[in-house]
Length: 145
Image (cartoon, rainbow, N blue to C red):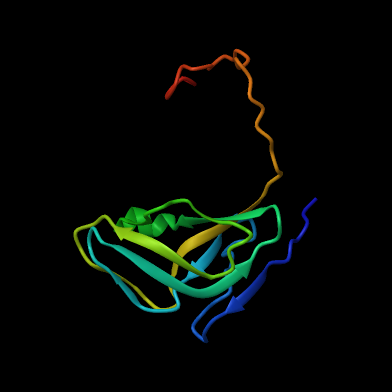
């Protein structure tokens, strides 16, 4: 059963766009640039979106790179995934880095990141002396085979 959750959004300028899904079964909502921005090789550059959102309590927003930009042009978010907490309502700006050797320009209105929303519960951490044994226990990276 799917339940729609309403997210309040403010468009800060006429170039800003509401995040959209390209296909019905997509999980990520594409984020658009509201300005042209040049990404020089090896330099972290903030790309603005012109949007502010207000997430409900218990909802988190993860900003992820678009796979096409990453695989074709080596453009990714430097803090991927970036987390938007419900208490943050300022403009969403995304720190991008260009891992290629060529400058890449994001056009105004270009999809350059995606937003994935999750609902979470509050958890409590219990201090114990020892954790239960499991198949993986403390075997580390690659312990699943």
